[in-house]
Length: 79
Image (tube, rainbow, N blue to C red; front, side, top):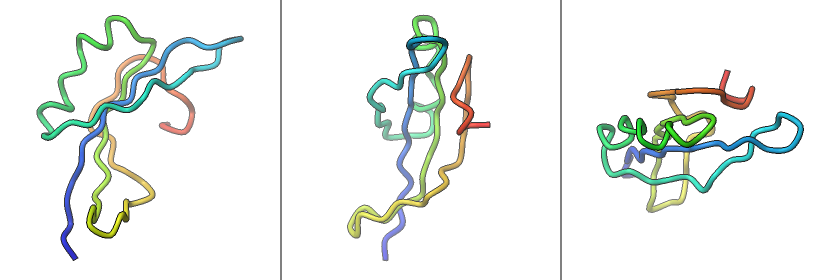
């Protein structure tokens, strides 16, 4: 089994009645790329960068990815 680490940045916008609405996740090739969401955070309510260790050949991803950066307001699932 080949283990790989993917990196993703997830941004959130304000939704109705104080809720948060997720944008499409952005895939990053490196951890450094995932740790540079500063520009995105200027226009979003919240931004989180994470990496779920995975086996892309098998399509298996860990249920609980590791959070590597968080900025702004995020859903309670990321507490």
